Image (cartoon, rainbow, N blue to C red; front, side):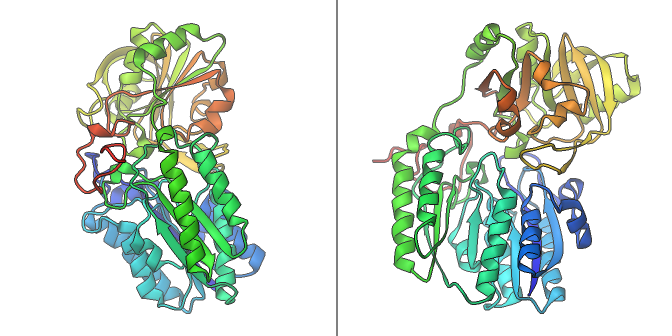
Length: 489
């Protein structure tokens, strides 16, 4: 069996002022052919799961390309066409094929294709023809569309948030693809989309309401003739008609059963919808929590400038808060500010600098913060995640500096990524478990690594485009009416 494997993934926040061009994908790293195998085998990624399945089932995996760009604004026409064209060309060169395995996101938006994942799957289907099985793995925050369901034989979503099961879902996709190639199964799919647009601060799967939904999905998957049950929470800032929670059930040749189970799970999601709200503290409550912390660390997370939801990562509001409250023995990751990094590099380690830090991308995430601090460390910003999420994956923050401002160690970087791993600090000489306060930009992924060391976790919401308050966002394309923006019975 000859199976093409590829990844083309982007979570698009259309309200970001930073367009996602081809250079953005290139900065994140485009791996092609054998380079994919070398870089990703054995890591906690979907591609690694595909490779595991190939080894287990004995099929030949033909790597095309793999790229995951940091969430940001709308993907440009040229970037989408270049990467989609490269994928399709690679599939055609790899022919004859017995199957295709894809790692997608499900919330990519391009200038000329709002349902960019659906368009990509449509082109893959056109390239390989109607009889070659296509199986794709999606993010738990996918906005699953009818076009995506139609173009693929099977779609499989992550079961966890933080996404610690990517490799397992890749294996599952490979196993199902083999059964498709052998003619052992005939997928029948049903997609149900309740009128829900939940945000993700309460979407983590180790607590309700998602814990209950995923547990029920697993019970349904254990039934005869059920191949997969996916619950995708959706991604509101994509601002597409498909945005919102999705339930997708795939059975073996039983369309009525697929529809029945999808409707059951969709109804349960609707009944549990209020559990997705809240979970965010006020800044005053955060200040009180810091005063009450015993040994720490208290993990303080600003959800409004989360790079992995499309925030620029250059808000200085967390640092402004820590300094105004006289917090010491704290470490913050991160503030993206290439100009500040350049100033630190010019000054050198041990020197004092005065800067206007952060707030340079736009005025949606707060103004720059005047600071005075000394440069404790300079680095190339590269480290390897320890896990559990993305274990073994190399992260590149660009040139970086640790700037100490009144007892707060601030990681200032050229590039923005969400700090999901303890090594973001450890690689810069900071032991997070020994700090009183750890300040992060994030939403939920940080929990996999940071919650186990935390005395307490507190979410706050500064100015920005990635928070829980959807009324801040000028939606134009989502379905209406939709909860929680509109009153619904």
